[in-house]
Image 1: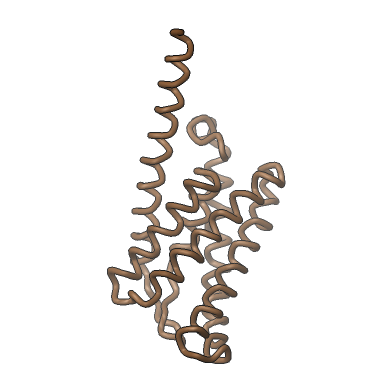
Image 2: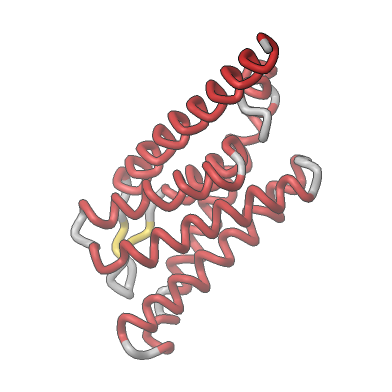
Amino acid sequence: MEKTMEGHAMASYDRTKLLVMAALFAALGYVATRVLMVPSPTGGYMNLGDSVVLLGAYLLGPVYGAIAGGIGPALADLLSGYAVYVPGTLVIKALMALTAALLYRALGKKNWALVVCGGAAEAIMVVGYCLYDGLLSGSLAAGAAGIPSNLVQAAFGLVVSCLLTMVLKANGYVRRQFPQL
């Protein structure tokens, strides 16, 4: 019975740790999104948040990564005057993290897989905001106007997240703390 209680306590500790780390990554995603906000032609803005969304996906896994990835940037939209983007950002960024984490796991957590996973996730972002901007404006052509700025953001998020993830993967302590990595 003691082993069962000990196992339950450890599982509870692991869930609590993941929940706390998801909250921290949501906060980091908020900050990374707000640090540098470059207006885009569609009325949105480019930012550093994608790198945190992807890093959180790799470190926290699909569920907690998606929660953190959606909440942080959505809060940044809400608190910076872009409330109309909150629903789109919440869904798009959560899907980015979910996709990246699931693909990363499926591809064996290899360094080369980071480019594939991040690229797929960033494609979701580019297409997602094109469609969302098209919905908001009533014109898919108007939504497509944001594609160039979203591609720049995607490229930056992909490169930064790959570099950060590879550096963190090289650290044994980080790998022990984040078995998803």
